[in-house]
Length: 625
Image (cartoon, rainbow, N blue to C red; front, top):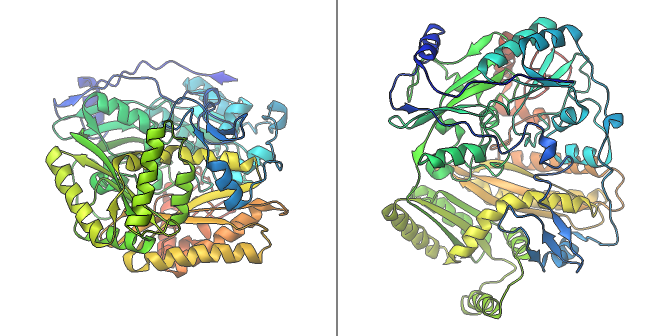
């Protein structure tokens, strides 16, 4: 069953809309500098299953495979790595995590309607929804695609099991007013709403609470994907919440602008999702995190629409309501529209890299770069384990000359500079700005690096490292095929705790794996991904070969919980940008204090006394409110 209506909205701000907005207490279009932006279809179709994998990360046509020659190859044509063979990756996987190509665990066949539970339909709600003309579907595949994010647990269930509970209906509002109508009907009929943006959550935030007896709808914002206006004088753009990151940047680029917000998930994650999770991007050093970019937010709650009355750069009006909305993870309402800062496209984008003798010297360099306020748009430091992994992902060299040059580089680093390849650490850089700005900043960064033993590693390595960000997520799906469970998690820490935190957490992972009977050495690695005056974000990758382990996901989650305890004991945070969801709820009260936790619950109780937004995240207890 699918009902829908065609939208005739074109995003143009007309005088009648301005009058209506003012009457409703909303910020009116106030400037002739606000230009409409032409609507374009989303890169991700309404029926996500037409383009995306049903049980893994990303596009159907892009994946790591073992080719007929026994080498790892990345398929498709979407990425720089697509169509290339990585001759060293198979050996790295065997040596590092004990993969045996004769030991394979294929996924179950794609689930059919017979494998998916029948929907729990609230007939009165559906009848009123149908009369509203808002598009909806109870198709089993539509429902399954919106029942999960991308935690290890969720993807493993798709490969080998069944979800106990999935949404009963998918609803596609087309505008803010549609969302208001859906929320009103949900309150009237006591129906649960779980907002769905890009589906990239790695905190269990999209999973349906298994105890929930009420009808659950997935409110998919993908049909709210317009840039409503672009203000070239005030350098802002008002966008609907469902616009995907890659579409937002592409459409702004066509007008000569950008937001500069580039999370690793930019291909698939949505603007509304960035706001709901307090997201951070790779280029935050210049453009800021999402809280630095947001000018205005509109969110529909069961109590009505929550927003400020004016579009201004800063306001002193008590506690900032935007900071109630940002990070609320779908527990209070649905973000529908966001006004965000934009900038003219940078004149120059230049990559670079630095090779350090060890991780410790690299961290010291990044701290000094941050202290002197000369950080490039992106500066990320990988430890030696991750450097070795990156080297294994290198495509085969296509010519004798290229091979010869690679040999010279290795000779220079190891023989002339005396670096140990088992200890070196590499930072990748991205500079953006005017020619003068990039030149000055580049000169300063490399000067600082030299004081900590760092040497330039070349522009190509920087660009390659930056682009690998988008394909690494695909590698976990190959690991699943050969008894590997793996996940990433992140934290933030003060500078004086970064090294201890990295060392303690990796040591704890290795120790826990050994004590719990994991037969193969685990893969535990980290990188520093974002830097601040007072500290940095640290990203961990952790995986192990689970041959001989009865409950690999349960064991993985136990070990990851131990790793999180170690992070907190070492002075780190509960999360830097992934959020809380369901998997980190146990540490939330400890993080924000008992009064702080009570404050969150009080806000929830006032805005949503029926627990309509009952996704079970953050402050929502595991039983219904």
